[in-house]
Amino acid sequence: MDSSFKDPFTLEGKKILVTGASSGIGKQCAVQCSYSGANVIIFGRDADRLQDTFEKLKAGDHRKVIVDVCDRNALDSAISEVLQHYGSIDGMVYSVGLEHSLPFNFIKLEDYQTLFSVNVFAGFEICRLLLKKRGLNKNSSLVFISSILSKVANPGLVAYCASKGAIESGVRALALELVPNKIRVNTVLPGVCKTSMTDKFFDKLPEERVKDIIKLHPLGLGEPEDIAHAAVFLLSGASKWITGSSLVVDGGYSIH
Amino acid sequence: MEENKFLRNFIEVFDEVPTEAITMNTVLRAIEGWSSLVGLSIIAMADQEYGVEIDDVDLRGIKTVGELFDLIQKKTNVK
Image (cartoon, chains in turn red, orange):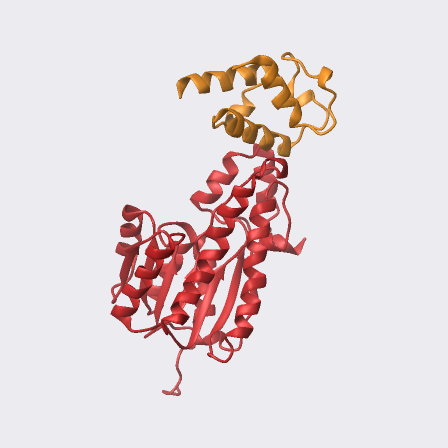
């Protein structure tokens, strides 16, 4: 066996920031990054749940920061704190997301503002702060967890779909802009995964509609680990020729 | 909670249902244009107009407009 062979999928030696790590997909991304060899910094709002994620990480030089990513000052301090400890980092997974099922007639301007603040603006602001503070190493990779609903529509989700579409357009532009910095930027587009956010979404829908949604996923509903594996791939050197792309991980939902 | 105001809020959920077609005795699922999106609209109306959270399990247990009125009223009083 060639002893110079290096596993391109490893995150060994990398420092990765995972936001929205208190639950669901973000939590699983943090755990998977640690098992793939990374030192992980986890951001989340809920102290207890963030602690639970922290305890599930494989041993390493990890850190957790309780922060609301929509609070600009707190976000600035949190990133400074991270960079003080690590110097610079090698990537980020932005997995903060709000779900909002509301028929179009009931969506108020504030609903769009809240959704875009959380789903879109905060993610780009983190990138800006990391760049401004020279906190991203060359060959860094930024991964935004978007949604297959940025491509495939669903009634009652106009604001949500719009916000997820905004991430993707923004990511493509950012990817081009960061080419000179040798930083890659991509999105993952999950279908419906078994998370507490999905439970909340399903609670509002009639049973038959829930069954229909499940049926629309030929491989069934996803697990958070299905998305985490895709995120790790995009963070790793194995994806070094991929930027500005949207990786569909949806159990076949969008084949139809 | 006032009955007429509630009926007006309820009717607004539907695009093309004539006002006089809906009374407290109307069966929800018999209304023309009833769909899962209408269900979502009713959940949103209860939240925005009355600050009350109902979900699909609540809706499933309800047959008529009057029963919906009663449920929202009950939940308003509990608050």
